[in-house]
Length: 85
Image (cartoon, rainbow, N blue to C red; front, side, top):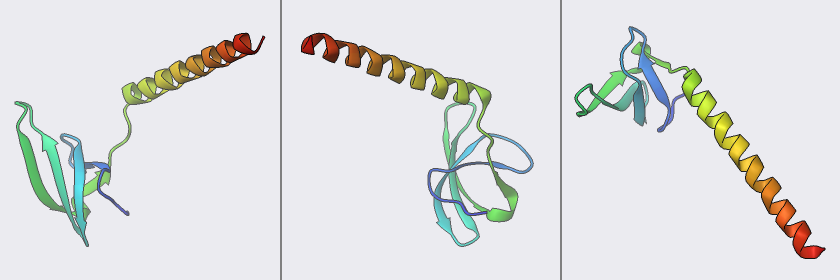
């Protein structure tokens, strides 16, 4: 598995999602927020990590943003047409 900074991973045993901040061979530097809002940083072996699956909630947010962008583009096109006419 190829990881790069910015990837979101999770321990194979479960737990909080971790953000990859550094990759040094099989040693992966990760940060995450604890339950109390504390920031943690730990270097973990690649063998204990797996890519996190995107949650349905994130997918829905992305779909809503795309719908809003489409609506804005349609509004812009209508405005341009009315200026030309």
